[in-house]
Image (cartoon, rainbow, N blue to C red; front, side, top):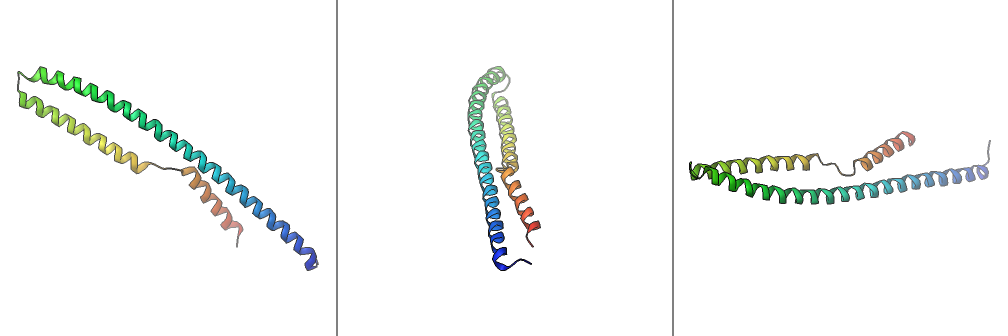
Length: 129
């Protein structure tokens, strides 16, 4: 049987090793979080510029189409022509609004970091009594 003086260095070494492993895991998680944060920033920036570009060209196309429809339908019925345009534009606005709501609801930021932290917690729960 080992004396208390011999067991203490082993306990200190084991504690140091556990702390070092914990720090390595924390460092890895921080790196993963920072990487995901950068990816999210890039994705948001790209989505913003694509959205702006789409909005500009949809607006230009919509203006041209509106002019075409108004000119073509003006002799038939000016009120009906404008009412149809209002209905079409309102329907499209509603459709894109619900698309945006769905996108915001399903957006998952930092999912890999959260999953890794969950795995770390489960591992610690198994190893610690």
